[in-house]
Amino acid sequence: MGTVAGRSYTRVTLALDIIGRLTEGPWAGYHRLGIVKKKIDLFDDIVVEESAHDEIVCDRPDVPRDSSNLCWKAAEEIRRASGVKQPVRINIEKHIPLMGGLAGGSANAATVMMLLSSLWSLELSTQRLCELGRRVGMDVPFYFVGDTAFDTETGTWPQLVGTSLTFTMVLALPPFGVSTSQAYAGIDYRATGHQTGETEEMLDALKKNDGDAVIARMHNDFEHSVFASHPALVSLRAAMLNAGCRKVVLSGSGSTLIGVVDDTETARVCAASVPTTCIVASTNVPGMEIAG
Image 1 (tube, rainbow, N blue to C red):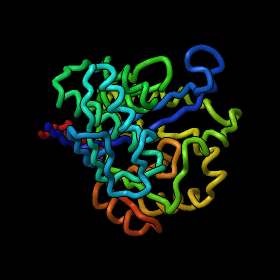
Image 2 (tube, rainbow, N blue to C red):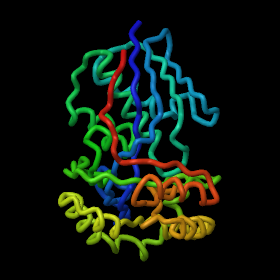
Image 3 (cartoon, one colour):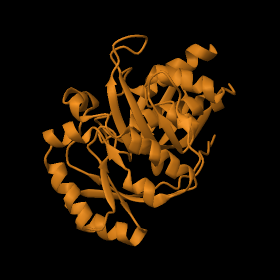
């Protein structure tokens, strides 16, 4: 039976606008967003092998091993689209924090889809993978597009942003997570959607490789609700700024804070001085290699 393996790189959000809740059309109930996403070199290891029955194996006991796992849904979508009936065992070695706003589950699902496409020689196009991925999760299509993209997560596909910029970051991981449902439940729409112009300027700065302008425009509308519910994040952000971070924002719906620094030495000093677990990361991400 065939086996394939690959690294599942995840992402951070450089800008996140909550523009409003959709009340009509196929995406009614979802939110219209504007997100600048960028991959980082933090990854999980995924091995997919043909098996006698579907199974998810993971070294983290809090990761679901049934159909609620996005990887399970990803395999089902690939089989439905291809007509392949073969069950698979999906082995996940976790390094990406859970409920940290880093979309590790979506990254894993996208990786499973790409691995199965390779294993079964399906030659699925990027658009087809995006179509199937959107059925699995709103964040999944991004991982098929490229390292940097603008994504609304409803109605349109992620738009690749051409840039050669790379950033060094400190990821501060509080001892608690924030579920997406919790973050959305606390939204005050009067406080969100006011920085879309900053996002447009960031996209322009990325294309011009103007790192200072990108950093200056980093923001996240989820901070209004998440910081109110978790004031410890406000103190943590202050500590990161005092330790040398140029800008600190929430990633996704939280709880991870991402701090941009000038170099890896500053990142190490910051990570050592901040009062929580930290990971030093880079947006210089190698292309995906599939082994098998």
